[in-house]
Length: 295
Image (tube, rainbow, N blue to C red):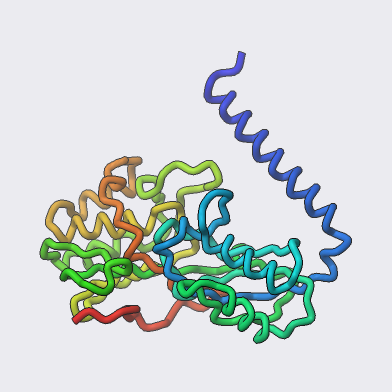
């Protein structure tokens, strides 16, 4: 007799197998025409306020879905594949999201960029389009990624959707000091909700930088990859340290034990930006700077 746990695992394995078979069948159906397609690498910026995240959904407006709709009109073809370097959640922004686009076309990359931007809404902009090798994959080939979170120390009339306003006075030095505890390979199970697609909650954080710029506190986190809500919960815990409610001891506990407490401190999506996707083995050396100005 199967236990509840083994039965759940069996159902999960079956779902994964079914998905794999569906993908294989879809590929076989399109294999004949796929060879005629050209793969393009896209760099995209967007304000995520009006969207339910990156990933296409049936009954919601998303970044991926909006771009695919525009691409189908540009190329006059329903068989358009657009894959991003990763998913951003509802309300999260991107300074330079990377994606690859498969299309059957003779249009030059710059013409594609202009035609897409003519159709896209004001809060999505294609920065660059270039031809790339068919083996290039926006997500699988990425070596590292960086996110920047913007915390505002004062109320702002113009940038509410791009910051998290903290009314309390924060101890910047404490936040900067404890942030280094996250650097390295750690288990971030306490900083993410359970998600079946995640194979592991271990993540390599390459660097964390914290900087004050005008009335903003900036937090940059660079790593191999990120799991669901991880960055927002790290920022939320750092803010609790800045408020004096949490300490180095608490962070060490969260990294060593599974705890639901960080979920209570999850920072809102408004202040979070996917900054860049790195496809080389070189570390990210871009200077940390705010995307808006609050003085």
